[in-house]
Image 1: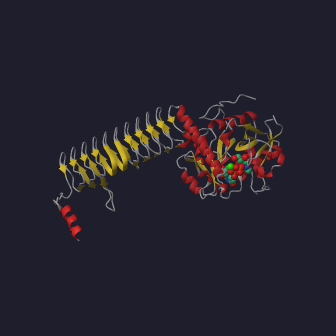
Image 2: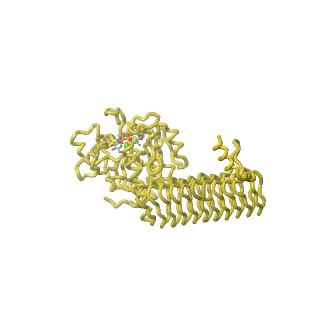
Image 3: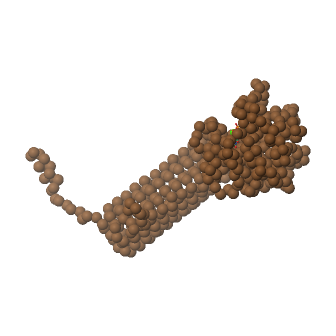
Length: 480
Ligand code: UD1
Ligand code: CA
């Protein structure tokens, strides 16, 4: 056997002249999930199953050579996966994996080889796909299937080789049609294939539906091609967990767990400390720089990035946020599409909603909610506060219980607080309103008009003191 060209390449095709397409089978309903959501949109590692498979495919061939075969809730699948630039092929009726390829026949006819991936097996790597293709080309096969050795092969199709050591395959037998002896075979069909397109097209019409599901099985192509005198071979995957399919909720959670553990291990290898990683939920796209510490029971989701030397304390949930270096996020914070500059301190129990832009060294404390605000460098809002639609300068102190009244029932209005202003506790700032640079707002004020620079504004009823009033009231009660 020739040495595979470029077998370890992850980004590009092996050095072949042949035109290679990738077809991703993703039309199935996913009956076993008992869900209204199409199977390939179920998420593992924080992304739909199909998104993982597309990402792997994109590292092997360009988007224009990738064809996702969709059918059940096709529009929903297509719109959930925008922007990749791949092609979609509609399999209106889902009559089996063989039928999925029949439907894609016209799209594939201009290619020499097609790599077929399962949209429900998200852990496949570009390296394995490239190795499978290399093996196929070296073997000059009409069909090459990826196999794996499973201790518990139940539910998978079994690979029947011509003889135990031969690369050549006689047939694939589905679990339901397998004999007791065949069920003992531990080598399973992983659901990934490479076909020589002319041989595939010339023979796919020979598939039939005489099986327990009355479907066209792509797996039957092994026997069909062999009977036509073509070469069918199997390539065994090095890492069998790569090929796990997500057919049930149990399998989804197993794959999700494996992905997240792998993510945590990768982050730790890169210098991030994660305590009790099994309790943390960290999505695939998250980036965390070295020397940051993630405490137990933390979720970091979506496209979040965290700089060096940060600490995220327990029970915080961070989604789609950018966090600079040396930020301390105390217990129980919720960050959603927020942007935090270096050295800021958040929490405990801060809720930063979309558009919160927290400046360098700023503090946001206990039970403070923010939305669409800019909080300047070194400014502090430490307790029991709502800040929405506000632009707050540097060195501002926002007292406990401050509320920006940003909504008049119809429209949202802005509050502007300039540098070094001081907002006394329990103030309500009725927007639109501006507090000038260095101004003071007395505690418990209701501010409805702009406050000029360096002024003091007090917007509360003057205090009334009635001497002896309480004593008299007590005396009155006694005489009754
Ligand atoms: C399939 C294989 C089995 C293999 C296993 C590996 C067949 C008949 N069996 O079984 O040998 O061990 O994968 O995971 O192929 N799909 C379509 N259109 C259809 C039917 C299915 O696009 O009409 C898609 C599904 O969405 C899914 C993929 O094809 O992504 C595989 O189908 P699935 O029903 O999950 O096959 P398995 O029973 O897992
Ligand atoms: Ca499957």
